[in-house]
Image (cartoon, rainbow, N blue to C red; front, side, top):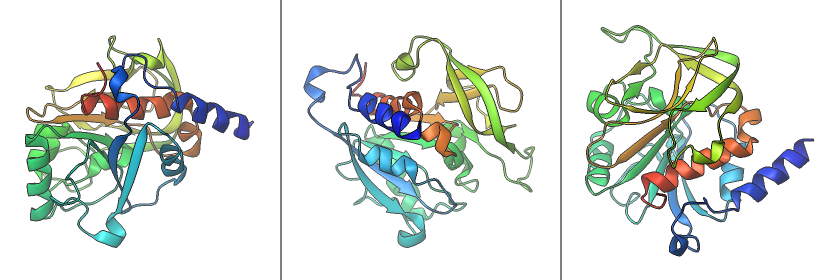
Length: 243
């Protein structure tokens, strides 16, 4: 069964998004993916590396320390943030803000919503959300549930969620009590107990495009063709490749 699901996911990921521009279909999206800082399932890296629509470059915070530099972000169509780091170094702040100011695209995945609690401009004004760690002054701590099962539904007909259909059944770790800005554009919601109702959104950044997707912990969701399409379409939309 697992082999069948994996093959199905790979086949679906080779299909270009139905509404993508035809002249983009031959050009892989140049994606910088950050990893490390916390334990993570490497299945997602293998699946994205197998996607012919994506040209993946990895930067590991455990090896590189500073993962965002002007050089690393040059000639990048989109960033997939999947690392954990409590502190944003001055070089990273400058590089990320400059990248977004020039129309950059960032998809913040799962545990990366907890990144940079010391950098309020990032999580408040660009991502539009934060997993609040204990002892964060003025904010109630967030919480997680390791065994969440629920149904997600797109809020509207949006390119990021269009290929999910009318609903998507999720089995994964969930987050609750996130701090979320009222200025976000919500993409996915759930009414299931054990999760924040807002599962994916577009951040309020007024320079580049920032998308957050909550699921992204376990192998079950990473083998799900709909999840892999969601990541690809979020990257393509944020990069201006999907209308």
